[in-house]
Length: 340
Image (tube, rainbow, N blue to C red; front, top):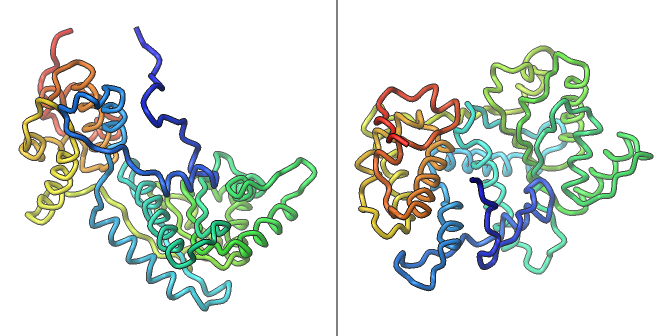
C-alpha cells in the first residue's frame, strides 16, 4: 500500500518553484533542516526523514571552476555594451549536477549582493528560469515575466512583454540571468530558431551576464549554423562531466565528496566510514554522476529509517534503483537483491 506523505513535520511547507521569485528567494534564504544527535528523543521520525531528504551536495571542483569563471565574466561585462558582453554555457550529460551548480551560483551571488546593498529588498539581482518544451519567443519571455510576478494577459503581444520585462529588470538591478535546459531549443525548427533569436535580443537589452545550462550542448542544434556561430562567439562552454575515478587525485575528490555526505547522516546504527569504504562501488553504481550519488545516499538513508535498520550497508545500496542513465552505465558490481 502506498501511503500519503506526511505534512505534519515542524516547519513543513510546500516549496514554490525556483522559477518564480518567491520560490527562488525562499531557496536562497532557506536554512537546511537542522541536524541533531540521532538518538535525541525529541527528534521526530518525520523530522529526521525531512533532514535526510534534503541532504546537501557538497561543493565540488567543478562548482568552484564555474564560480570562478562567472566571477571573471561579471568583471569583464561590468562596463561593456550589449554586443560585447560574454556568457557561459554549463554543458554535460544528465544528472551531473549542472542545475545544482547553476542554482548554487545564483544563491551565492544573491547573498553577496544583499550584503553589498543592505535594506534594498526590492532588488532582483538574479533571475532563474527553465526553457519550456516547444518554446516560442513569447513563451520564453513570459517565463521571465512569471519569475518577476508580472501579470500577463492574452492581449499583450511578444514585443510588449519583452519591453516590459527588459525595462523592469534594468530597474531591479538584475546582473545574473540563469537559464536552464537551453538544449530544448531546436534551432532547426522555426519556433526554436526564433526563440534563440529572442534569447540573443534579451541578452542585448538586459545589462546582465547570462549563464545557460544544457545537456551536451555541443551535440545540439543550438551551436550550428549562423545563429549557432553567434552564440559560440559570445559564450564559453564549461564541460560539467561526471566525476572520474582513474587517478589518485580523482579518487581523493570522489572519496572526499562521499565522506562529506556520510558525515551528514544521522542514523542510529550506521557505522562511520561505511560509505567511504565503498566509495569505489558508489562510483561504479552512479558512473560518477553527482545527482545519482545524492539520490542513492538519500534514498538508502530514508529506507534505513523507515524500515528500522538505521544503517546503510552495501546490500541496501544495491537495492536502490537509480535513474536509467546511471543504471545503464554502472558496471556489474551490484550485490544480489534480497528475496522479497
